[in-house]
Length: 431
Ligand code: AMP
Ligand code: GLY
Image (cartoon, rainbow, N blue to C red; front, side, top):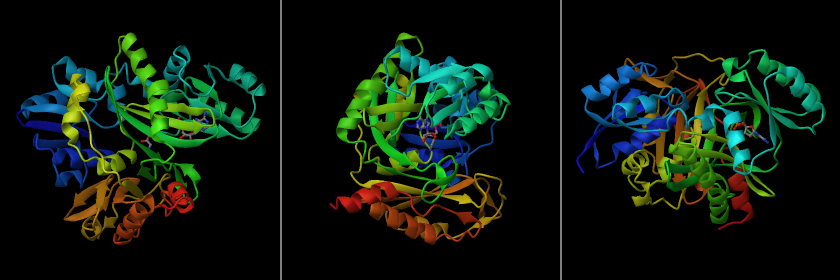
């Protein structure tokens, strides 16, 4: 096969790790990223195109003879960028807008689960506050209230009592999450341990990648407001081989089949947010893209060439692909700007990145960074993902924090306990 030019859409740590993996591919000719960040600029040519302007992306792809476009975040997928590219014969990684409804509408996914007996929390949909509140009166607490649409991971409220639950209903219908809150779901609270599970799907065939665990809350000990994710590790011990097989059989495969039958096959990476309950794995939600920072730990563990696997996902030939993984654990610590997930200042200077990144088994992925007069500056909330491999999660953790400590960025902070659940397990069951 000839070499190929590739364009990655996005600018987060997820996209940097995809760029880092694709840059190693012998199949790659030239890599472009839109818009990218300071880390991605080290392995690609970054451009500034308006991702909402699909024609501008198509024109650029044609001009630069790009053969494959990898779409990182959910918003352009839900907006149909993959459809626009494919309608003019451009190969793209990422599902159609119709299949992206799995992430774009929680009600769509819940209805699909109900129709195909896929295990998930019991639920009801509501378009008005009065019937939602009447329903709440009949339910046990805690209970979970969710805005239907995309709300940047913030549209979920776990209410401990009726008062909180009613307030959540009012907040959603009063527009706290904008258009995402024109409908809401009330669902049963599931007890268990959470895990993320990633599977490539080419419309028909599935190729399980790996599992991971995220740390959504901003503070050590899982306290404080939710964020996009403050750190992750892979694999998740709770996702044993049997649990992965059960998840494939009961959750992933029926979903893939249902979308196929509906005439809207899913092509891309299916990210199942799972609750491992006493009754087995249950779906919390689907995302239609890699997780961030879960992608970073997956990319560290992947031994095989990523590019042909993503291309096979897009062109329906995934059945021909096998992937090799490092048996080691990977762990990623997110460094964020002080104030995140609330308001924060932009533009602080970061140094020490080379000392950190040159350590053995460590890679520092960039998220909200830019180059300014030769310095690397912070431009976002989540800024760096300090990622390490280790024989155990404990070793990966100590390597990652060793590298964090080599970074000089007084305006940054991170959680100090990423991986705690796995490390407690490792202490209980030393290898
Ligand atoms: P989501 O945005 O749907 O992933 O939800 C955000 C977080 O809320 C999840 O990661 C879970 O920790 C929690 N959550 C969502 N739904 C439930 C549920 N039905 N039971 C318990 N926790 C939930
Ligand atoms: N880390 C959570 C997500 O990517 O949705």
